[in-house]
Image (cartoon, rainbow, N blue to C red; front, top):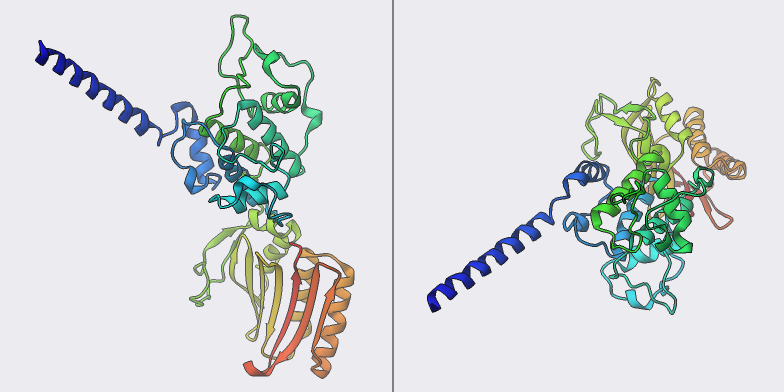
Length: 375
């Protein structure tokens, strides 16, 4: 009798272990209905590396922040931290800086009393509200698309502050129902916990609809076939799409690069989403980059700066900045630098800095820089 009971107990224990193993094993794989869109989101770099598991489990508030920031990054926006002490309960959190960035960009709020609750779960109506908040922060507000009077099976459970966001996400096929009731109305389950895969789908659909991903191509540029510089990222003859480059700088900047590709005197040595390196003639280079310092445009010339090089530098300055006063001040400085070797350096307002000098430590290289610290 005891042996029979022991065998039964062991059988039940093995079943529990197998069930638990299967359940947790499946957490690493999205549900069948979500897999295609999760894969697309992964392809476009919208899923932070820490979120590539546990798809069927509930999403936490800090995890939503990581998803939202990936979309902000794709748009080319930079975020400056407004406060290092916005929330008292995120100090020492692994993603403290990311939470502060999201707060500074106004895509999240706290609970009051200095609390963010980074590890709290998010309801479906909350994630709809957060998605709508993100859309507004990015300047993608489409109030005209929200139709009044949308009915849901459990619409009376949707909080007043979330109704507009839920309506927007539902009507634009960003948030779908979890089923239908006997009358055919969709069930939203607004107070239900949002799973990670559900949140990924919401964010991917928003990014897809607004062409933050899957945007029409701006055009491709080809790295100079004679390029032998081993320090650059691209190989000679490699094609590169300028779609995201246009977001980090401007559509005009991308268009100018496309036009320069046909120039006999200008070689495109390297290009990425956030940078471009040009060689003009045999003695001049222009480097454009956007990084944590802002936007920097730099000219290096091993001969006195000729008119064609100066013209190209000012063209690039115009398409990434377009401030006539900055261009005029740079022209004045260049004139003195070229004619008399006089160094210039000037801070223009809070955002811009220009400089030019002859570096005699590098075989008399003329160096000219523009720095937009606000970008």
